[in-house]
Structure formats: C-alpha cells, structure tokens
Image (cartoon, rainbow, N blue to C red; front, side, top):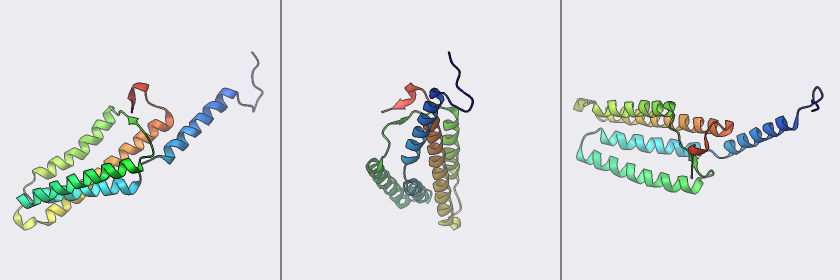
Length: 160
C-alpha cells in the first residue's frame, strides 16, 4: 500500500474535514432565533411574577400569561423551525442545568415576603426566573449544537 506524499492529505481525511465542515454549517444555520428564547423566558418570568403576588387575581393573570405565552411560543417555534427532529439529552449535565433553573423557581416560590415588599418582590422574582430560564435555554441550545456539530451522539438519541 502506497503512503501519501508529505504535505498531501489522504482522501479519507479530506472527506472527514468536508463532513465536519458541512455538519458545522448546518448547525450554524438552524438555531432557534434568539429573540424567541428571550420572549419565552420573559413570558415565564412575567407569569411567575404574577403568581408570587399570592392573590387570586395574580394567580389567574399568571396562568393566563403562561398558557397564552406557551401556545404562542409553540406556534411561532413551529412556524420558524429550521431543523426537524432533535436530540434526546439524558446526560447528567442536562439534569444539572434543569435542577439549577428549577431550584431558583422553587426557592423563590417558597418565600412569603411581607406585604410591604410587594410588588418589588414579584418583579425581582419574575426577572430572576426569566434570567434563569434564558440561561437554561442558551446553555441547552449550545450543548445541542455542539453535539450535532461534532457528531457526539448515538443513533438512539435522535428524536423525530
């Protein structure tokens, strides 16, 4: 078997680089728009802020904002979707990301501030949840993009 001349790459390495380049280009062109992540995180934050007011009106408004926002998000996300399918992410890192975001929601939901702190507590809690949600969405999207770009997943991880 002949060895390649110095400075000349084998066809296999060129093909691998072409595949990696095409995979990276596909991942770069198909992310969810950033404004959609911001809008969804803000919607969840506003809904949570209303809910921590701890009044029937606050709970109702929070639930309506959350449901309307979720339906709107699903419709817009489906309309703007540039990538079909997804990756099933069952790694410990994904569980840790979710736990950290949920811990913020849980802790803030358990605090019962004095009446004099409202509405400032609700605003701060809603903003905290929105920031945590946005960080979660960005972190998850970056991890998925990295896995897709590097091919670091099993065929069983692919979802339709």
